[in-house]
Length: 252
Image 1: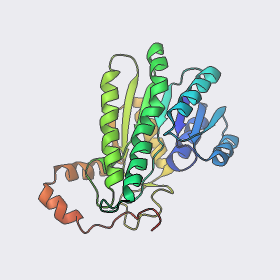
Image 2: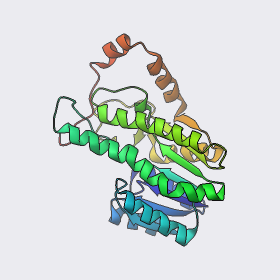
Image 3: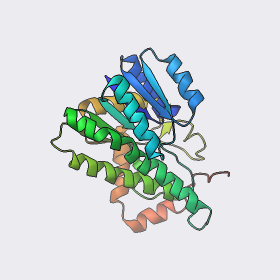
Image 4: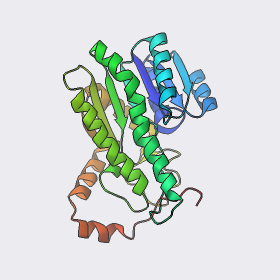
């Protein structure tokens, strides 16, 4: 099996890379932190290739995809996992740049990841494109305007790609996790219900991918919470969440 993963240097991406490598997969490791990728590569029991790049750089991702295919063949699985999360204040002019960076990484980065693989996978008539979204995409969270917007957009993008590729043999899997214990959530100043370790989340995500689930929320109790939030009338939602703790802004 051949797997290409973005955001592989830490957290969920690191756990996914370790899991698939432990099953004998050849893994393409992509992230900005070259040293962390090299350390991960050295720890894996299966062959891997390292690509230190920013997923916002579409040319760099096209080059990485071409190199991976040349070395290992068309991947069986591409996981767009790279993402950032930071609190934002819509009244702060400086946070407009933060909003752009979050959307560019979380949405455009996923599109940049998939694009160079779509035609080769469609030509092979097989493969899975998996995107890591979030339950934060269900409703706008206070302090999370950038992150919630990016994940809502990612969910819609993945659904569009899934419909586009229907009947091609290429599946698109959308996973919307709740809280996962990673460096990205470590600064959250609030209780995180049903939180999973990165290893637990990776195992559940791999199971969903193997089943080619078109859409799933993990863990299952968070799916119930997310559905309740989506059905909650705006007046009730606004009253409940207006006083909710905010995710810290960058630098706070």
